Length: 121
Image (cartoon, rainbow, N blue to C red; front, side, top):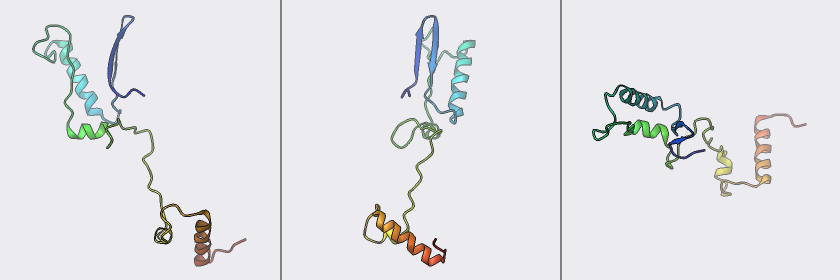
């Protein structure tokens, strides 16, 4: 995955890759509005430009949060969020830490079976 947005020109093609999740539609709307202003000549993006166009966006806090995670990486909305691991209170408070042994887990589950009167086969 590309980490940043790029504009590439080769073989009579001009391409733009925006590393912006589609869930951040307001950013695309701003790019489109700026491109339309460039197309009509209403705003070329910089007063010193006489031809071509400069398209840039100053991200709002909400847009920044939409794009980037807490580590500054582009968010992946297609990946599931981390699900917190459920550790039963009895194991958590047993002094064994967050990684009980298999034996501790089996004993815990057997204890649950006894508490709930579920028949064992």
